[in-house]
Length: 263
Ligand SMILES: Nc1ncnc2c1ncn2[C@@H]1O[C@H](COP(=O)(O)OP(=O)(O)OP(=O)(O)O)[C@@H](O)[C@H]1O
Ligand SMILES: [Mg+2]
Image (tube, rainbow, N blue to C red):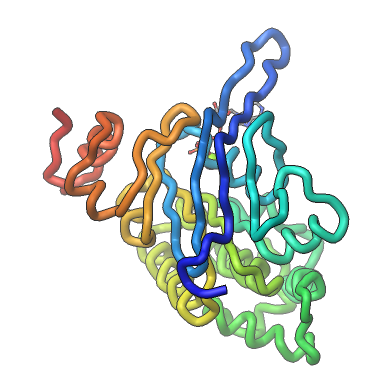
């Protein structure tokens, strides 16, 4: 597999959340099609409620879809069971916005990383010894291995969440608002570290954020979502320069200092 080969192919994906307690049903994904290629970053931007996390959750099989197709290297992602499901877990990892909700408060960082490393297809021979390298790769000292999540700062926890995803040796990382809760300087150091690991490991990212400037900075290609639909897709700089969809223009105009005015 070389850079540019299609890893993930999604076609006409739709997902409706059934209304509960008298609330109406809600179409969170509406005919979404996209491709993710090896070693690239596909950015996904859109306002709150546009379906970004729903898409992320479908890609890592935390949520099912109602219709459409999703294929990862020839494996049907929507129907995978058994060995295929394990293969997908090894290949596609996710990092969430809030590591507090995705980390077990009663387990040390060491335990969390060990568990992840054991999921890898080829766990490191010296698995304990490799933990220090995993920490180093995300800019943390090995002393933190025996800390519990609550003993770390938000930025440090997010670095651990990235280390845990990478410990599985995936080919794809879905990052769902992974730096949105952090202050700007911590954001940029974590984004830089993600770019470094990407270059080193040849990872592909699905990089999700409501922050257009961050998505623009990170992505090789970009998708703009609104109300569960893709309203625009293409080269990020091209889209920023010459947005075709009125909603994209609004998004760009809302970025401070963009100098862009929605018509
Ligand atoms: N489990 C659920 N049950 C019912 N409705 C849901 C569920 N999860 C999400 N939704 C609805 O689906 C829509 C899309 O939600 P989603 O979380 O995918 O949006 P998002 O783009 O990630 O938003 P944000 O930027 O706020 O994270 C929203 O209207 C949301 O209320
Ligand atoms: Mg979300």
